[in-house]
Image 1 (cartoon, rainbow, N blue to C red):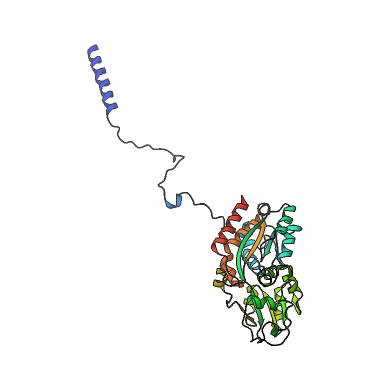
Image 2 (image 1 turned 90 degrees about the vertical axis):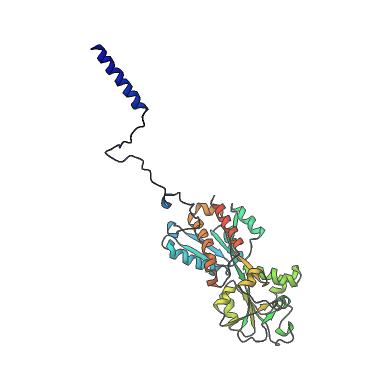
Amino acid sequence: MRRTIYVLFVITIFSLVLAACSPAAPTAVVTSAPTSVEVTQPTEASLPETEVDPFDINPADYSGDITMAGSSTVYPVSEKMIEIFNAEGFEGMGNIKLDSVGSGAGFERFCTTGETDIANASRGIKDSEVEACKAINRNPIEFRVGTDALAIVTNKENTFVTDVTLEELAKIFSSDATQWSDVNPEWPAEDIHRYAPGTDSGTYDFFIETVMQEVYEKETAEELFLNAANLQASEDDNVLVQGVVGDPYAIGFFGFAYYSENESVLNILSVNSVAPSFDTAESGEYPLSRPLFIYSDAEIIKSKPQVGAFIGFYLANVSDMIGEVGYFPASEEALDAAKEAWLAALQ
């Protein structure tokens, strides 16, 4: 009996050893509920999402007021951007106030009194204006938004001048000439009636630097301009348009957008035999092409998210619509630099 038990014991142990050394057969595990982690085969939808585009801005996500003031030249661009920003969801979330007061007055509101969030400018900010900004703890950031070709215009009845040299243009707007014939003897002996932006305008500054100081001594150029007879000045370009439209011997200058709106009642002159256009403005061939800007400050952008969102939206969309108001897009390089400045301000 003991021998029999012993044999059975040995057989059992041997069987267990063989079982341990044999490959395990597949088994099914049945559970009452799914496991807590479900592994699925990766698909395109489940791959990690790409980085969100910071310029994909939904205006409806922001609220609060925004104040802007400055250049009458940039005014129609900013006005259009406000219209689009409101239409895409910001309307009802806040108010955007926009004033056309000239670049100089715009910088005064932004840098001296600190009453605006954004300054519109048709010229670069001056060192004195930067210092005024710093005095109220603002560090202005420049954003290039477009290109203008300054329009030199005459009345539709004017058939005697279609092109001017820079020298002739400077003399036309100086006290050196009273009549058209003083500039060119082939032109009529009729008084020149001048319509020009006021001294707070960036367009005024640009004309003095680009035209008057190129022909006359820097010390006297501005004085010659301001002392010219029959000079009507205004920061409102629409006033200048109406002045030229109603005067057959008038000449004036302002941003190209205002000519575009009134080309049926105005003539535009070429300068140095180059007509203003997208190509000549972009290349700089047209001698009176110039950049357009808006300015703000990093602390404003961070403390007022609606301002930062509006500027980002502006930069993302301005090149697509700027032609609608009569200006030309900034170069891709200039616009990229503006976008980088905006991203840096958000940090």
